[in-house]
Length: 127
Image (cartoon, rainbow, N blue to C red; front, side, top):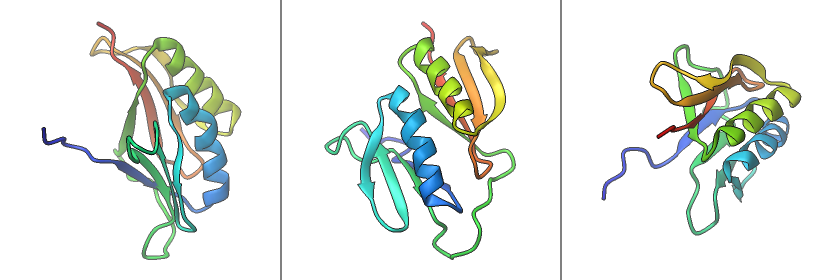
């Protein structure tokens, strides 16, 4: 089956600071570091599953900037995982972009902006 998205990558201007932030919040979504280089860090559920989310220094060596209207939605298995993702993100310096709760599509989301301004949400599909 052909999948529409292979991975997601967001830019950072401080890989060390960003990695500490994402290490803390992605654990609630079952993700951990699976690939580390001087330029980027990849997160996935296991090494066999492959990288699903990257933080990276821009290849062109210019400053990373967040895209206006750009957002990354990461899957969560439970509402509790969304709550912990959001809480941990705020405790690690994120800006609140929307407290956890049910949105217009009937699913459960929590929104934050990371240290570089990237808008990230955790989403739990409610059946």
